[in-house]
Length: 401
Ligand SMILES: *Cc1c(COP(=O)(O)O)cnc(C)c1O
Ligand SMILES: [Zn+2]
Image 1 (cartoon, protein in one colour):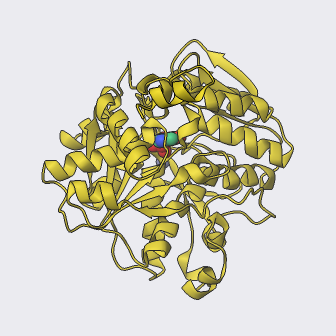
Image 2 (spheres, rainbow, N blue to C red):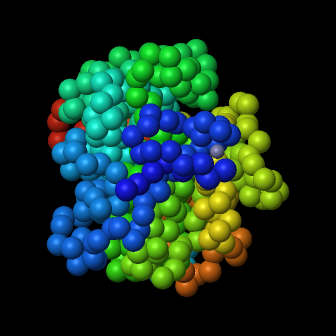
């Protein structure tokens, strides 16, 4: 049976306790399985469709899950961008192809299923957008109410639209994400809602399947896994999952876990660069990539371990580099992602140029959310459509034919 274990002091708790932090020391919890008890083979997994639930033996859900067929996202070979960078083995896992358009769905199918399993009857989160969209979707599927807190004016329009249409109670607070999270955490503790931010160890269990799928799709472990980092839950989750695969003997090496942040919001990069024992929060995070506009990453302590133990790296990219890569992915690879997602590939470009990445490496970039999440940022970068009179000569003239 699995249990919850503190990543700092090692205190263990039963898996059915509603806990978000260690009672003894306040640090983060993680789900720990007894790998000896897990009787599954790669063959069994391979027979199931590629999806979060292919890996259900390594997930904590014992009931019929609340699912919309998340995961099974494409892994694209970036041949044109790779060639430009001198990389023959550059891949992007397009998490924008999930039901609500971001990888958060992997966490929420598990998280909302766990809410039901633990007899919780309402759910809540703070969000820079995608978490709220995903929670609204899965709460709708489960038939339970959801409350979401957003930083006012700082959430991409597509994400707000999703949270609203799927029926969440949407509250905009005059403060940033970090403050919204404190507030919703207090609300959940005082009023018994189930908190589904990435502080929730069960949500991360779903997200670790990105790594499992990439290994299955590539037919092996990549040399490097590159993710955009906001609250640092995803990079921590992928690392944890791959450690478990190693523990089961399914893989024999771990990829270099590499996190990319936006320059105006890069406390993890600083901690890695200056070899700090913990991150120093950035009080006023700013970036066009609103999904990673986070000053106090909740899962930083897990992420620092993931990066350091695998000989990985952390780098920051400017908003300009992010938007340039968003356009490059769109125009040279046909891959439409929101700005935060482009940060991972922009980071690879930078690290190749600075010599940190070796050109022979096999690299998987996670591109985290769909282009249509944030149409405003797209429109601002593009020439508007040419409007003409409705006749052929005007068309030919507009096309200079
Ligand atoms: C949530 C999110 C991130 C950041 O993930 P963390 O787990 O918070 O580090 C990056 N990109 C997109 C599109 C997201 O929705
Ligand atoms: Zn502890």
